[in-house]
Length: 367
Image (cartoon, rainbow, N blue to C red; front, side):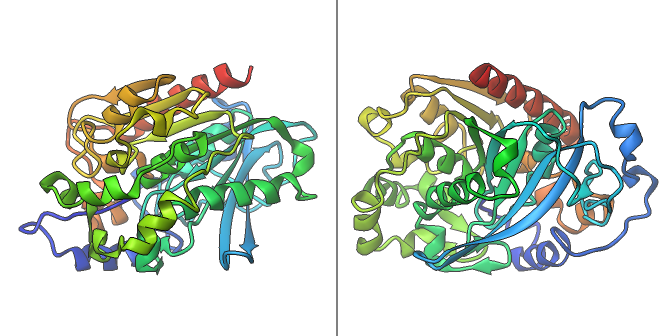
């Protein structure tokens, strides 16, 4: 997730401070009637399963990367504390550390956008889990809202490696390995997480091409972040060389279904052979009014180059951040750039549409 703020509307530092203070794991209760969450009983009237939620910290010692991972899973146990009750987002109830169901389910891994975190797409994780999927979302170390390391904003190869390492751990974890079907593994990602998805499918980015694009007007817009401004300045010759050699091949053959939401850095792909190793289907979902990862240079570009891809464009004034959680009223007022959509856009309806498309896609791939 990258953020550029309209200069005349708001100082981005103000927005970031609000975002840090309110947007993720800070606990507060919103008393607005519109923010009252559904009960487990109400939720189960329209969903197959209740949702369990757990957290684990996995450490990749080789790369010195702690990977905080949130896991959602199907459960019948609604006796535990509702983990989402105090989140500043409108989300269904989840039962913290609930009991497992003795069955094997597909696994979907989620990769957040630049400057985001593992909670950003809880709406999708919840919908998947309540329909019989286990979902694991990872904090990409050094590229989250509360842990920003400049070079980690351009070393995109760390993200697919994070996902593969987390997958290794989960498949061998005594707590989860018995409820996961290892033949049914997928991934979904947003923005830079969308690129992560494509890299895991077999896409091989050209950092030299991406660096060249960053010097164009379109590239300057896409590379501008509130955290560090123009991040292309961190794409030095060493990073370009490592990305194009040592860390070029990131495909994970265990993953066979891919959903890329508003995928970014598409201009790092200039030749079809960079995507020739992709042999599984990819669902690309984009927003027509996306100014951060414009369809032309990103989702549309990927779709043209990836033979086995399907592209859904959400029409109208739907913007980049529609793929993030729906905020409660307090957070929406504090950070409207991220959480308040155009008056013609209903984020909840968009989420329902995207969830249905993703569920149908994964079902077609796995069954």
